Image 1 (cartoon, each protein chain N blue to C red):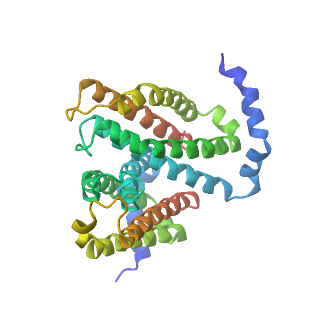
Image 2 (image 1 turned 90 degrees about the horizontal axis):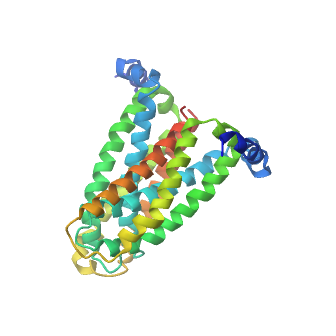
Image 3 (image 1 turned 135 degrees about the horizontal axis):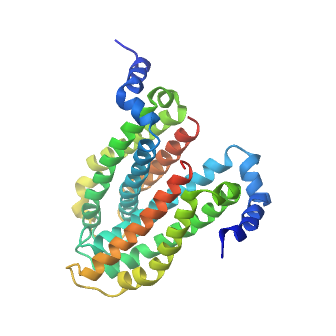
Length: 164
Length: 163
């Protein structure tokens, strides 16, 4: 079985990897789109988290606020994933060995675990607290963890680019 | 006013104690300040986008524009304040580099127009009590101008590091 390192070396040597790395226009455009998608996705996630924390839009049902924002969070996330994959592709080996990138992946996984735990527990009883201005503690904890983890993802992402 | 007359100001900014410290004092100051800059702009971009989308008739359609804008306004102001403070610090640390940087100039022009638009027309239209669920042509134009101007600020900002 080939090691992950040899896969990253192969990745960045592909025509696409080389083109992304060496084009003076493609890399800024892909990175710009990555940041733009970040604003759309994490910006809307943050407002949904703040509703879960009982801080903003308190008069509206939680499911209403989150449901209407969700398509934008997901759309932005998919665009982030696509552009993020391309950015990784361009410098796969350097990024793979970067401790900041590993931290970023860890925070992303923890953010996913956080969503999963929320969906499997307190969200199942949302009809009981949907209209509460301040949702129950487990929901507030999920909202807080989401805000914190996304902030850490962004910070680790910025450091990955700096220390490359 | 020609750009030439601004050079001494940029030179002075570049020499300030805080700018010098961020530039040379520690390798960590700049990335940490920039991380807060990005966190705050994510929130500003997200909140402005939600109002713009609502003006276009998409997202949070069951609530009136004015209500959404009023709920999100404090978050826009808070994130904008953090963006300006961290942005000024970043600028002080590389003022001379910014002086001759086309990306920076583009960003500042867009920022000026974005701020004027945001606090006049955008604020008036978004916060005025518009109960209609259909999006009027006026609302659509305001949303598109708002998105374009803030997009210009973001693209210009990203370009500073590339041009």
